[in-house]
Image 1 (cartoon, rainbow, N blue to C red):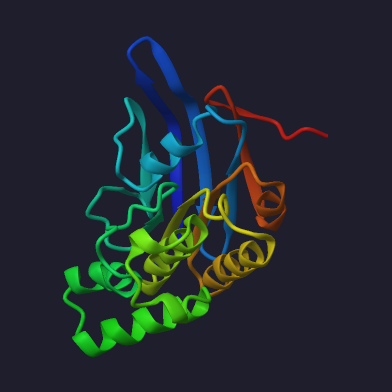
Image 2 (image 1 turned 180 degrees about the vertical axis):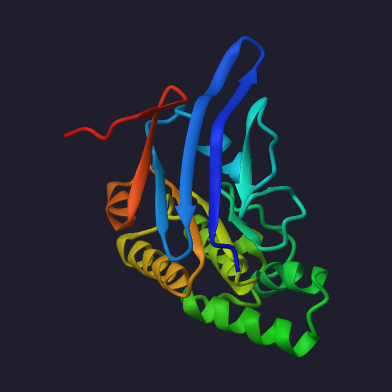
Length: 213
């Protein structure tokens, strides 16, 4: 089980523009840590770096002292744009990563059904994702991540398209995931999400900033 993820002096640039400037973050097992800030502050870039999907220009990200990479199996991610295959059903999208890990078919199916039930999508399990609403697709993305039971869960704006009831549901699931000794890092501009976190890193123009009083 991963006990901590640590980002140290992370710098990411695109041409002359600095997206992240010496950003540090520490999250430990059992915590929900938030990353907040206005649009364009670097939240999504930091989440991609923490997940090992983007290499920083300088600095490093360590899982229990080891560099994170795209092959870090304990890492799960909820993407802001859902990242679903539109021509597959909700259940097929949730099951796909489990099948890629070669889980037994019965276990993959049980995890898929349980995850869709947890996010309240039993009735649309066999519907194509292209036929679902934006909020339903977002919840499928949450179910897909939770079904894999990752030791580190990176969630980028997981509640942005959700109504109040669904937002409370997803926040509860993220907190429940952390309560089982997992690490959850959530990027959001939603104050309700920020308030649900154990602590929060605020970014302004790619730099860490103190929380406003």
